[in-house]
Image (cartoon, rainbow, N blue to C red; front, side, top):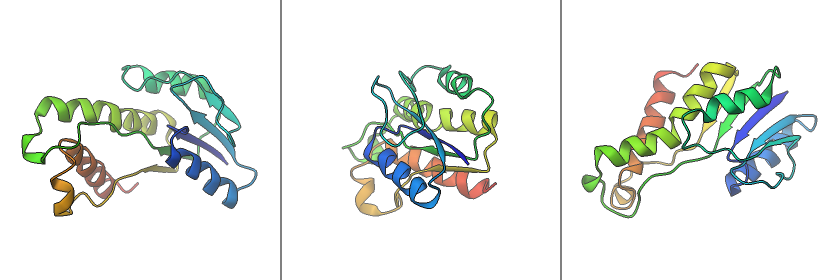
Amino acid sequence: MNYLIVGASAVLGHQSIAAILQEDPQAFIIATSSGEAPIAGASQTIYGVDLQREDCAASMVAAIKARKIEAVVYVPARGAVGKPVEYATAEEYRASLNFSVVPMLKLMAALKPRLGLWFSGFMWLDCLLALYGPMIYTKITMEELTLRHPD
């Protein structure tokens, strides 16, 4: 099977590669990185991915070429944290969505994989409301999209 791991240079990306290879040693893993170093365990690395660019998903799809992707694992998340959520602004939320959610939605639409996976983290816990600022809204958006569109 063919897998795409976006943000594979992160710890969670490395762990995703290890988990996939443990279950599917013959997996073809395409990993992305914002840098220029190859990703250990990946069959192919797409370098210089900038999720702040509007065309980032299209450039990843072009680099994949005609390979049918069975699963997309989306690791990246960015947003202002460290302040109570009630001080989050709409602008901060939009910026976080554009980095943390929109590219994944574009990849899912273009590649039509059997499975899409991104990571959240119990954002409904009161203690996180004090720390996660606008990022909490992004993570809740991810959870809501997943629950509303399980396919």
